[in-house]
Amino acid sequence: MKKENMNCVVTGGTEGIGKSIIYCFAEQGFDIITCARNQKKLDLLKFDVEKKFAVQVSVLVVNVSIKEEVVKFGKFVNDIGTPEVLINNAGIFTPGMIDEEPDGALETMINTNLYSAYHLTRVILPRMKAVNKGYIFNMCSIASLTAYANGGSYSISKFALYGMTKVLREELKKDNIKVTAVLPGATYTSSWAGVDLPEERFINSKDIADLIWATYSLSGRTVVEDLLIRPQLGDL
Image 1: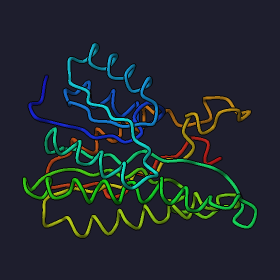
Image 2 (image 1 turned 180 degrees about the vertical axis):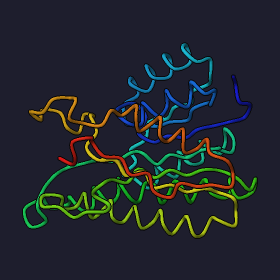
Image 3 (image 1 turned 135 degrees about the horizontal axis):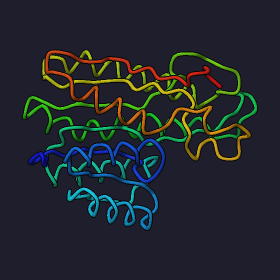
Image 4 (image 1 turned 45 degrees about the vertical axis):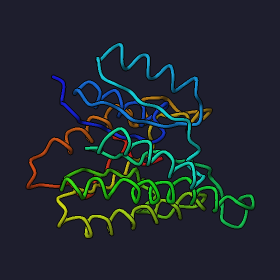
């Protein structure tokens, strides 16, 4: 059943968890606004989702590690309409020890995993506040909770994103805007390409999307602050 004027914004929507989220919300009648770096993949996603679910998909090529492009995407979103749901999903994962990872690794992952969510949220929030409702999901990680060797700058960026999510939760209670940290363990996406492990050892990205939808669907009097998801056999 089509929900009128219901927009779901997902960054990094052409692959992995972001793509699963888009299909989940589109199936529920939400129009989709998404970004990624590859125009061809965005066009294919738009064509397929609109064909399957009779919703509108708006896309924009964006490198989320660049502030100006993120702000441009935020204005693109606002021009379409006030979003009901914002899912800061885009991110990058590169393993490495702090003293061994290449110069610039921290800046790249902070820009992509933290600042993209920070800047996009700042552009969109005034519209959510004006209508006194909305939902923000930030794609954190198990690495936001537990330090591990070879986590390096990735863990630093995800710890910071988790902290930002906690701050937003406190700040936005009075505005009736819900905020949830999504903390998945190892999920079967391109980030794990080439790893010699069976697919069944990983979380299915569709399961994460379904849990986000279930969390969104709760009554207005309830919020899930942390959505912690692990592979059945434990972390990798």
